[in-house]
Length: 388
Figure 1: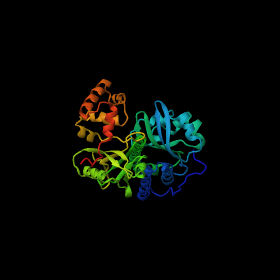
Figure 2: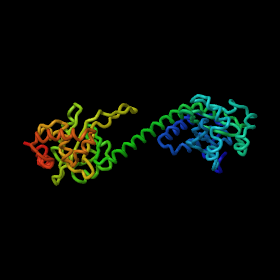
Figure 3: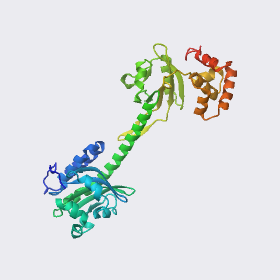
Figure 4: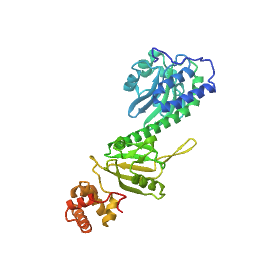
């Protein structure tokens, strides 16, 4: 089953499996967690260091008997086409595969312990597949199990070799490979979650920043750069700041506040253009790491509101200015942003009649008699910080 190139890492097969050799292999196993593309090379180092002569093939495989299936994770020393033939024809069907399913995770299993060589030589799997390479024995390490699937490291070769050194070495490496596989799964899961979060924030019609309590930028979506270009913010040295001093003061006041809270306001750009801002304090994220705890985001800042980024009026300020209830203020701001009564009703999952009832209260408190008058009144409100 070997490739034309043979083993990548020849070694003295008469030397003992010394601890420094195994420690080097353990290091390579954990390096492969961070660089999954190097698993093939790690397997080549294991075979070159521990295997007897002519044992040059190794592969990590997810395999199931019900239904029969196989998925190669990594491989070394296999001739071209072997993976495809094995997956299509033999995965989950042959006697080694069926008998290995009964062993627990972490087991190092010699195929001679699950069936005799004579029995195996009579199987169709040997006669039609393995015989050309003279392979009639396999040492397997059972690494994980998910439902009907079993993950294993398989090292096949000719049975007339001494494999005791290989088995001793694999008993040392097995728990590290199991741990490495679990870490790899966790990293992959986190990468997928992070990728989904990035995709979601990039799809948002506004800029999103995650900040710590020192206003260091931990993450920002793809729309963030345009707000710095427009002059609303600065991000020098990966630190967030508004260019509009009153806006920066509101942000700093929120940072100094210990109570969970948020604030909405209009930031100003150099030309006097407004940009709606929402700053929310979130529960401080933390993650355990070697040496202690790493702290994450404590503030989420958004700039902009919708495609076109039509400025909206701060809800709290509208409520305070006209004495509106929070529900009335939300409706007034939505109308100022261009929504219709029907849009708002659909967004809030209420009836249009309920929205009209809110609008009557807004008219009474603001003195407006039409939606157009209401929008005009909101547009004439003093800029934040200049009410006095």
